Amino acid sequence: MKILVCISQVPDTSTKIVLKDNNTAVNTQGTTWIINPYDEWYALIRALELKESGVASDVHLVTVGKADTEPVIRKALALGGDQAVRIDADSNDPYETASYIAEYAKSNGYDLVLCGKESIDYNNGTVGVMLAELLDMDYIGFATNIQVEGSTATVKREIEGGEETDTVSLPVVISCQKGVAEARIPNMRGIMAARTRPLNVVTPTAVTPVAAILSYEMPPAKAGIKMVSPDNMDELVQLLHTEAKVI
Image (cartoon, rainbow, N blue to C red; front, side, top):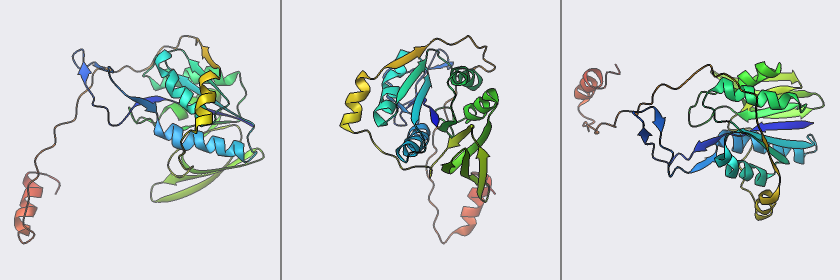
């Protein structure tokens, strides 16, 4: 069984966001980039676990980005990926991103495609489901457990108010979240091997984006904290009603 893991590059959450060009772009100068945690900690690690248990034979990695994304994909290789491809395109549109990955995946015969439930930059969580549609595969989202036996996957996923267990025939696209696997860090042997392992670069067929970012807006500054005595519930209720406007 061949597994494809989708890897995206995102800013570290400690990075200070600075807007530029009249709030139409983000200033990335000095930004620290990391693998999207949902892709790394859950999708990639579960794929590696399936390989280590003998269920899968190959774990391939794919990312959409320019040359500056290569350190991130090489870290994914260091964790244990067998080979990686960088689709040479710069995209903020989920449909465009999914189309590039689908074009590559169609010609490589993957049985299982794993991705994180969302990326921590835009948090839209739509690439996985679009990818499944473009590949004409079933899709299961928000997985917390994935087991594969033969040509069938059994997947537990979170739903509102509980948990659901699904069975699906391969091939399938699954988005992963906390619970699927335990995070691990690359060892020195993996890091050294990833430096020399080939990284294939693919020039994709042009895709017309269906969405564009018009502008960004910073969240409002946090207001000061107002302390209320626990003996003065009337004042607390009044403030919640007139100032916080939550009741």
